[in-house]
Image 1: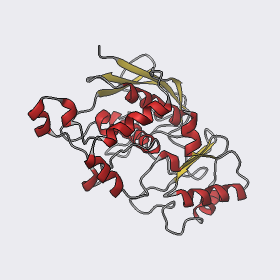
Image 2: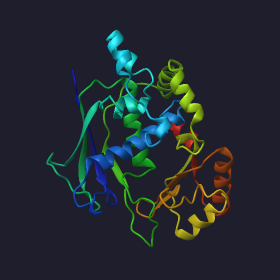
Image 3: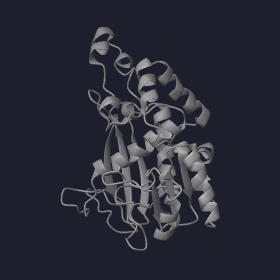
Image 4: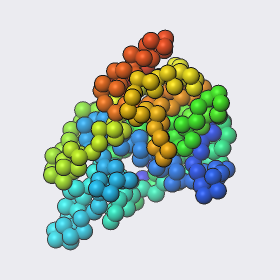
Length: 293
């Protein structure tokens, strides 16, 4: 039986979901769904699985209609479709859920442009979600609640600019009693069954977001001076980003947290060492956070 999975959240800082007029008084589902997918992809990669980069021409998934028509088996069409696209959709394959936002009373539309707004995320199944998909989606919401952020404008730096995207998950979606190891094995099985996904994974740039190369701190925030200091450990410019490419360090005075990610383990070690030199304690590597899930 298809279900409606509901999470209940509260904005700690305004959530920006974008729009053609660059205003965000009314929340847009597509903006938040894209943010959830980004975290989902990073978590899948951090667990050793493969998630494509849907923005890259040579690394996009598509449903193999010919293979499906030949056997009538959906799994044959999905053989080369990564776990993120299986859930959120890709060319030829629609998302397994309709994503809806509502206020605390279940009314739509909802405005998230201020702090203290209680709202609902509803995942209305149109195709059954696999157990590992529900587990991953619930852990994504946990990560955003405990360590991360949601939506756009999160690269703006306090106190010069306001915070955006910090939320509290009051009630997560129900998840099956799976262990992290069981989910990792299922992701590994999908990858092992597809030579095409293995090829694309090998060709992905090392800089693609993967949770084991993240760093998180839920007890400190970094001001602009500290962020600029931290970026000095990277001569490649990866952490600083550039026009059209986001910075990789996100800091929030509201919520007292920061997070970011490195291009490789060497850079991650340098980040951790510099944070220690700055007197910032309690920063966790992504692999530690993964082990807590």
